[in-house]
Amino acid sequence: MSLKHGLLGLLNTEGAMTGYDLDKFFKESLNYFWQAKTSQIYRELSTMESMGWLTSERVLQEEKPNKRVYSITPSGKAELLSWLLSPDIGLSGGTKNPFLMRIFFGAEIGKEHTLEVLKAYREGVAGYGAQMSNVQQSIAREKDKYPKHATYWKLTALSGEILLKAAAEWADKAITILEAENEEEV
Image: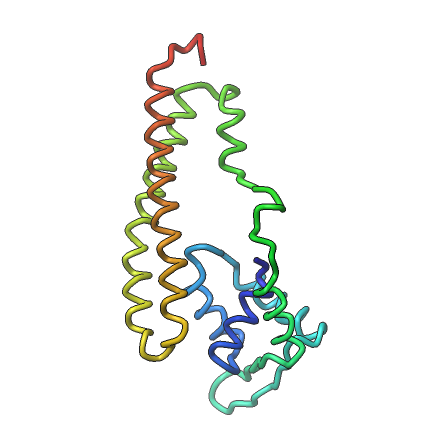
């Protein structure tokens, strides 16, 4: 997925939105599997507008800062549908995982430091796992507003829950393996 497609999907689902609203909606709905900084979102909106995938209208306000409202165009809807119907399931591009790269070279910092990194990772995974209940509650609250989307949103949340459980299990096993190894063997 690209950030562009996530933003197109939100505009297609919700209708016209400001950059601020898109950023907020993105962080409340997609953030558990795709993180984006506010600056990235605004940069993508500008790029997408130049590509003709969306338009924007500047709205002047008296007692508040002016705002820009974005709307998806027919070209943007076509791009979104093309991406959604693509047979690419995301495995062909490979995986980029900076954390695993760090573990791969863990011998450079030694067993004790690598164990600290793994334990911090395990705690972080547990924290994200706790947040997944908030995601499920959010989906339940929005079910009436987005009845045709809620089931699909539940599917992505389910993937997040399962991936977090697998990550926690991996971390536990990795810690056990490292703790069982003699320093000379590591």
